[in-house]
Length: 420
Image (cartoon, rainbow, N blue to C red; front, side, top):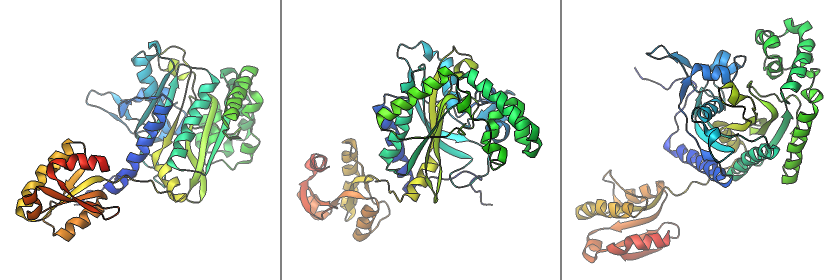
């Protein structure tokens, strides 16, 4: 019986892996520019972390988590998102006491959600995310947004739209919550079962419902903007003013609530082109109560997460090819048995000097070896045969312009390094 890959997962083959490596390298480059440090957390955590951190009224917790018991009868879950794990690590390792504050962190890694697979939505997917813990400065909100936009622009995307909203502080959210309950309650029987369950627990989540999004009451629902108190309003105005000063365009969307319970104040999404339509590429926002919810001190926080799979779809739509570096610096072509004996020695010499080098291992003819060098996108080909061994010199061919030179074996490394 042939064993196949589980539904909702995928293999990244070598020809595609170079794209992923390029994207991840750009993510790390941008984070370095903004002084964000990498953090790596476990792929599975206590189930309680996500129930408390993500929120038990969310689709993620109610329907999508991969949860299981281990041999010690402990409840564990494959992480469905990255923020809760980062905050757990922040609390557990007392990073709030570190001298450098705020803590500016980023992560890249797989997440898992049991949902219906479709384009840009898999059961295992990869997120790049950033979190800033410890600062309530509106300029940090703007910085996080600027970082995300810088990443997409460095990749090459042009069809981007930033959408903003504010969910306000707890006082503002409480007033808005009561207004939402009063608005939806008389007709809640017309909504899906999930919305009915959320009415009293978290009515804001009703606005994020995919099934009832066309219901007339959605359009007329009370807007959070009308319930922002003075402090929340002033905070959001400062964020917008900083973005204006940076020259970052945005649109305001009072219906933007995001899908996780921990958000407050600034929320945002970046939209992009995907298969002919506009879709959400990433989202994020402020979560000032999450650290204390997970056992730490009262600490402000803000962050975002984006899907690399959705980014790849957007690149296809905009017809953007990621420039892949040449996979090899040089490829050794050996002609004859004595040369075959010399080739591994040369390869080791080149590799020890930091050059990416390879040779044929399939007993191909000379023409076949050159074709293999082309397929590997080698920048130089080193040819050795009986004549070259006698002269202790190799023929070095530049694959870009076709020129070639005879170079002594003991000078090969320096010659190639100069050319490269």
